[in-house]
Image (cartoon, rainbow, N blue to C red; front, side):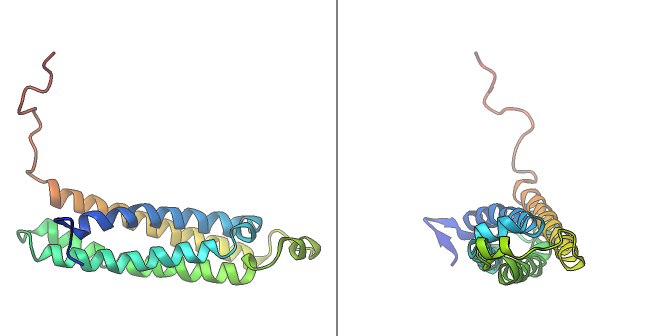
Length: 169
């Protein structure tokens, strides 16, 4: 996919990644810390993580097409390099979401309430910490990629002073 309605597809697809990665990260952490939320969301969590995972290479491929159609400079190269690093984070979100669903989310709420569980078991604590680390890494990476992309797109592309007398009144 290269163009959508005459615009580079990357410019449009990147908005899905910017929304889905933090949303998936937040949902994962909430479900890892609060098993009742994982049971309530059920299959929604791994499906959200799967859509997030699929959106990353789609957006990256559109970005590679765009990279070949803009002036080559260090800012564009840096953005492309950073963008290549998001897929493992998105993969981690998906794997953890699937494991969490498999272990907790597919258990019916009634069966879960009949089985007493200790709230701080080492496995649950480790899962929560791992989910928090992967979620934070994914969100920070999206921020860094977005920041580098904005710099690549907008460096020298605007004036710090209004060009049309913007404060007329």
